[in-house]
Image (cartoon, rainbow, N blue to C red; front, side, top):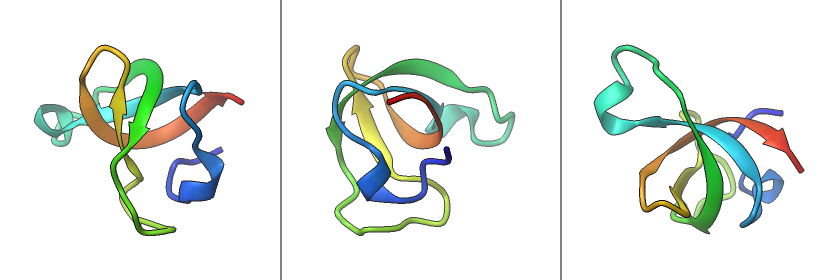
Length: 65
């Protein structure tokens, strides 16, 4: 599942995000969602989240529900 729709993402989910510094390379970071930072129901580049380790990025894919 992709991470462009806010309703698909909940705290505690395992996701792949792209960090701001990795947007050019496309390197993905795996982590567990702590907070959803995008308030809009949809974002074309991915919903912005904070992971439990404090990293912030846009969800590229949801690994488990």
